[in-house]
Image (cartoon, rainbow over all chains, first blue to last red):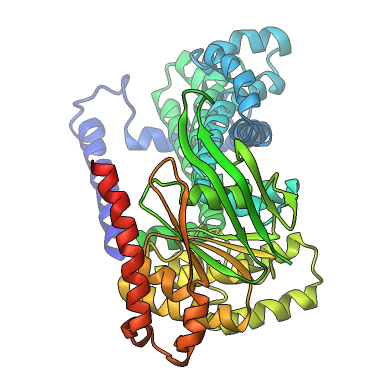
Length: 260
Length: 265
């Protein structure tokens, strides 16, 4: 583990060194195309201090993070129950699946114009689009998770005479949870992608807004700061989800270890 | 009480006139606290018999009933032990056993004393906090048997419970089940394709024909066991050496071989 971490850090250092060499040192990449490390640093100082694109970095980060978390949580709260219902009841699946077949091929980003038309440039439209993009993977994976529960395990539950609510909370949800978490990972990724796209189209604050203004200002250092900020936020939120997953699936890690 | 009754039971999978006839004219009564094993060639529908008592399948002809009540759905009065254990992998051994009792609204203190007793009886006490996957197959099946026994069911249904275990573990489990069943008799319907296992465990052995499955013959083992005092032998191999045991086993083997031959003819 120690070894892996040090190798990882070394890789990052090498990439940074190559970056420095290609830009500031030898000028292989012209400054107008890609910023040097120093330019990127000064852009970071700029947006953190005086602010850029209507606010300082904390404000942009806070706004983007807030929208992603809200859209994502909203998607979980609606998508997981719907997936459970579809996995559980063939009738519900027969009703709902055709709607999915129609809606699924539409890329979530294609909903942005409609969302803005309905809800304006504020937060509501973005949350709606994020919700939409995160919703689909939650539903589909939860559904598949329920269908993946071993038949005898379900029969054992029937045999034990489970009340309905307990059946859902103690059999269906934990049984489907490995797949539910797979779905949530995909949902989270989709949430970030959609957020940036939605903010690029129109926003008052947010990292997408920073990227958009920086592009208009021909300010490559600031563009890179925005990109790195999204990368770090995406990594951090995935990390938090991973911790929740490890906690919830303690039994499953034991199961995976037993299978070798 | 726990009297299982098959009256003229038939089961057809698929459409009634063109589907697969799995069972035909099954008539069998299993008395209260009696241990009956059904043996038969694979695919003869013996598991289907058990699944109908459990309430997982419905009979297409006739009636399957327990204490005179026709079976409609699964329930904790008819506890099932599955071949593949079917424990809840996300629950500890203790919680797996506890779940059925919670569903029956047994009080907290009674639950813990009953679980403790069964854990003790099945030599599982030290594994109470383990998850199923941390245990061997034999241990997992022990938990599944404990989960069924703790409910104090009228009827215990065991579907090739030792089929997935290795030979040594299997013998140990058979001895333990005999110990459990003699000490704490229940109405048991036991499905197996292992002839020795059936003779060793059961009071009566029902032999089934190949599909469509019918009951070909029912052998009374208990009267021979008692006359020859099998239970005075502690080890399974000693019982299996007895002339009366060998005689019964050979009889069932012949009967099953006829079925096999008929299948290939």
